[in-house]
Image 1 (spheres, rainbow, N blue to C red):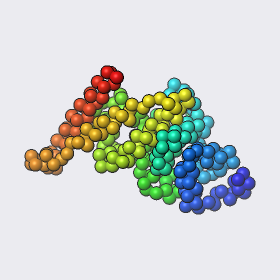
Image 2 (cartoon, one colour):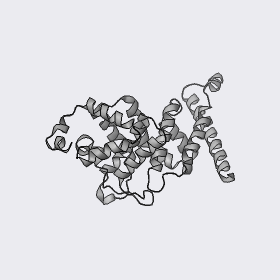
Image 3 (cartoon, rainbow, N blue to C red):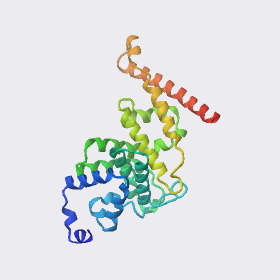
Image 4 (cartoon, rainbow, N blue to C red):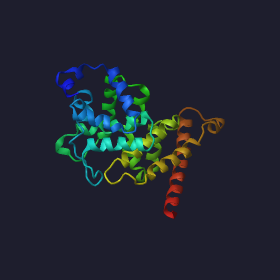
Length: 255
């Protein structure tokens, strides 16, 4: 394998071949071993330079005791397998932090704005390797919104609703569940924190259920349409999310 890298053979692998092998690796119980091996032989930098750049990039130890972003990524991938995530979700976990590889060193260990940078890099990553749209869609959403999920307990109802709409969670509840699982794997993929609870996902499930229960039909029957209908729907969903958040907090205090 090292010889293939040294003589340039790896540089000529076609995207379809790369994705086929990667998809196979993501289906295995120890998916992270595939990427560890590629890095050991020098192929990761050639095939997946966006991932290779993460190694050696520090993160704040208070949030990431493992510190290294590349190590965290593979730890999160291992947690995704442990949690029973499907291949689409595992891919989202693999690429959720790509933007941290482009943070200027003078800003380390902080990575302000890495979410949007990650989403942009995921788009180009998927385009280059011709990765199926189903994978790309979840991966971009996870890259862009995973820190919103981690901070869910701190977010105001307006921001919670905005996050649900940004994720298109009301129209795509199955993808929303995949997103929550990817975020849980990310949160658990940290040294010493592998078994901690993740109540953020429970809160987002509850506010999602509340918002989804608000339907447009009764408002249409009242004669609303266009912008008036959209605003009334937003107000009712916001009220539902606010109540669901309050109920969740009450339950947490009484637990």
